[in-house]
Image (cartoon, rainbow, N blue to C red; front, side, top):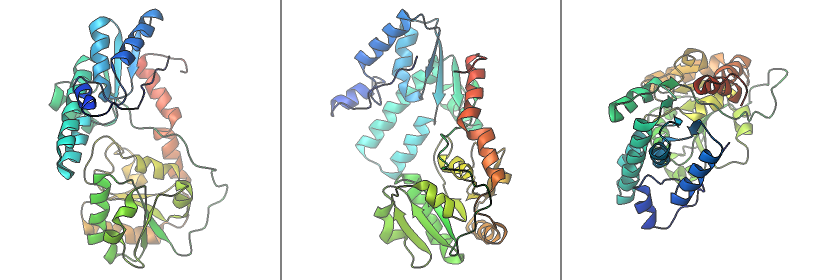
Length: 327
């Protein structure tokens, strides 16, 4: 049984009153009651909660049906995620969102029977904040959006470029701004910045012939196909960075920071280059420009399929749920 919340939000101030009760992202009292009724009527023994922001539901479920096993998937440590957002933009709303998510996540962490985190880093932070770490580690998984796997190696673009993909989120903004200041002027390859909202930074980022801000696009796949490699200069956040797995899906090497490779430690050496300074970025980019001779690396694609595909996630979650059949 799959049950989804309504993503629509009540208007302020009712939204914040509801949020501080643990009702986030469409969760409200009628929704909780309806879900509890369905669970009871169908004799459900295990409930999978897809996000620690639904701690209010976990609390209600454990209060009314304490014997049911609750498994919560922590996509991030939400408190850490929203702490970073608050530091980047200190407003009353951002601190309220941080507190609301902390309260909801605390309920999810303390009351769930099983806690799934994306990385050991998140598990350690979960234990530090709430006294309980992960019971299972399960790296992120993505829906496969590669249009077709090339039968033969695709040629490199005549005018090669490196690709940065990311929306208008504080860690993306800070990371690409750092890269443009400290790295882009020192390398001989153009960087294309793709992502919704990034066009707002065009005047800040663009350097003629070196950095082009594209903004939103209809097809990310086409940009991945044409790129020489992907850069991920990310310095803050929680969970795992989606764009690293996405690059592997498209058979692309990644040049990124240690933060970008959190959760990818097992495959980082094969996936690309991990850089701690502008000098290391410059060196890695110069090396990549010489050594990458194909637009698609099937070994990177295989890494994606083995570790970060939906098929791989299905096997991992079946183990966590204690099930042997497909689901």
